[in-house]
Length: 322
Image (cartoon, rainbow, N blue to C red; front, top):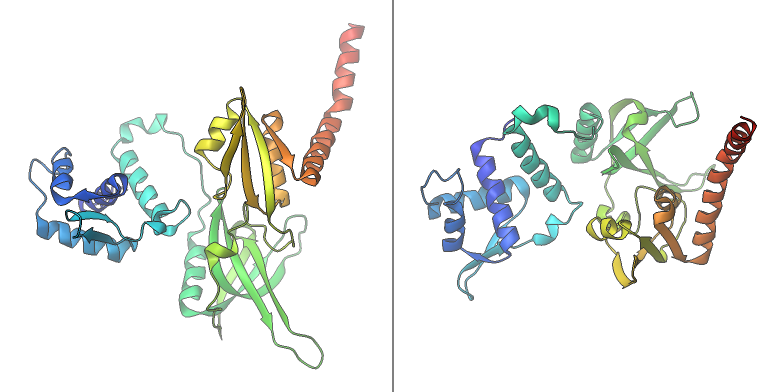
């Protein structure tokens, strides 16, 4: 779907100011005239003002002006443009969508990753979040054919590795028979069989912050009790460049390097999904600390190697007998 012209202008304006960090209206106009969108006509101040208002209404991004220093424009709440924010995701998606829509002649040469479409459930969950009502789902976990009936408060949703997840809050007041129960659970949309909204209202905890809740995590595993700690890894060869360009976690910082390696420090929860990520990098990543995590990764590599050991030995014997 091709993005309307106005949206293209909004996206261009945000990206231009974001890239420049601070820029005057004259400089914006200079860059504007270099685009095909301008058709050689300058950007009027009235149009610029309307675009600013529309960008704030649609994306929640406001463009501010520093009148004390040459009337320079900047993104007043640039923190919302962090990599995993809704605003940044919307902006990036629309930008990429526009580029691709203008290059349909190359569609056989553009390969994308599929994100399962969960539009119906996604809309239902968002409606429930807006109305502050609990949802009821039939959920089937991996490894079982029997679904569970769940009823919970939808607190937030998260996209991770091409899958949508919902964070549900379970609460039950104490009774004479049972103690109070209060906990969270994370559920994958693609394991939901049925979903419906209930008429049971709830009040979200005013201190809850979705970003903060997952802040120390690699993915969506939060409730297994694993505390955050300092992790140091060593990346070899080209892997060190990949990790520099695509950090594993927002806490990542480079603390040293050698002839063919670089060391990175992370502060996060070393959950099983993080271990699986390190394992997937094979000999390109080595955990230096903590020692217990290094041993865990070592044992995982050992178990993986043992799975192939019998087959490799059989192949070697067959080759020797030929």
